[in-house]
Length: 606
Figure 1 (tube, one colour):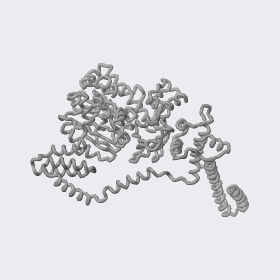
Figure 2 (cartoon, rainbow, N blue to C red):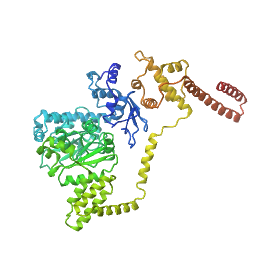
Figure 3 (cartoon, rainbow, N blue to C red):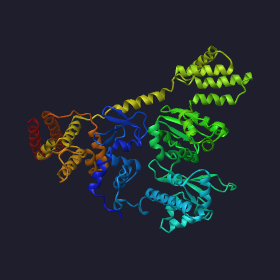
Figure 4 (spheres, rainbow, N blue to C red):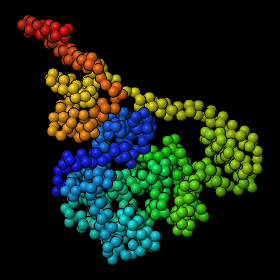
């Protein structure tokens, strides 16, 4: 049973953590003014509206409204509780966490938490079998033969599922996991009689993690080459695993992707692991399909360069071409790393060594058009006139997509050399193709252009507030940041009209009344006492573009606007009651209401 985390430990983690360091693991941030901006990790956007204020240690998205401190960020992005987020942030900063604070995750928790715990436990079991038992001998030998030593095996948490129908099933039944959860987990298959059995048997088990490092699925590689089953078997989709949103090794690769400003897309999981072993640690792999919009958006938060490194054999080249034709997202520039001699990455590393592979991935990146022209060339006999014309036609359809005049001239020259004709002739063909396309696509993707323009405008437009709410927002901002303002409001018994602002003000007064809080508010720390909606609102207030200091007349005007608004609401209410009293002919009530109306108007006029 975990002990309640004391305030002293929370303060230690807060003081030793920079929110920029934590968020930078998930979002590519760039300085703009005094804050940093990036693409929001909580909703899809093309124009950055996600802001981090390093001086206040808070974040806020101007589009979706989410905001808070470093703990709120981890709670949101990793679906963790507040205590779990504290532990997570502490571990990120290499802050020692006492054992009694470690929160356990019981199987009686929500489905997602149960499944995450099950996958973590299954991975531990498979790892133990691989490294510590005779059952794992053959699997360990296979991995060692592929130059995967124990360090790398542990880095990727690789294990082995023995050829046993119910080893894992009995393991979880002994822990009282419900039948319903067992079926939801994806760890088990079902026979014709409806009985469960272990999905993975006699396979090297490669855990698949989410962006935060939680194990959410497995990929199992068969050991028996003669077996009729698939070489690789992946977990089915579950409440915690969506293959269209998952990228293998992203958790390990994030830091290197940001530092190198590019990500390498490999074809398979073992390619990623082999590359990692060779010192190329910014590699990921999709789940056997082309990159989805969700996966591309995840990568766009980290980099704007994707380099494709598939096998060098014919199927690998075909797969590379398909990938390039499907990846047309203009948030990225693309490159191709071609493995020579029809080898896959692992074969190249084994034969040529780590250093040559590193050099290939750093300095051997082709442009997509260069790869595509080579791809076309291999499919045609350029000594044949018909093939020459087909090669020219396909090449021009790719060159016409280019924007840079230098690139166009370079590749026109290359095609001209390949065909033995003049650049002038190629350029005339290119101009004719441009005219044809201009006729076919007069709108030039008008809707897409308009949508992006609209998104850019709306992301920068601030919400409109009436005079009352503006007064409340500014007054609350000054009350948070200047003790004399809040003391004045407290002594006057002041009340905000909107409950959300009043809740934050009440929480503020309680916060500063505590013994160990100084007059100057630590915004990040104050957020820990608020609920999620109020954290979002406070982050919004603190991100307002405000002057360094207030003036007294300004504060008086805000207070007056708010108090007058309250009186104006009373006048509206009394007038409504007067109408009803007149309709029913209640003369006494009309007289009483009229007196009230006169008094309220007198107060308002003063």
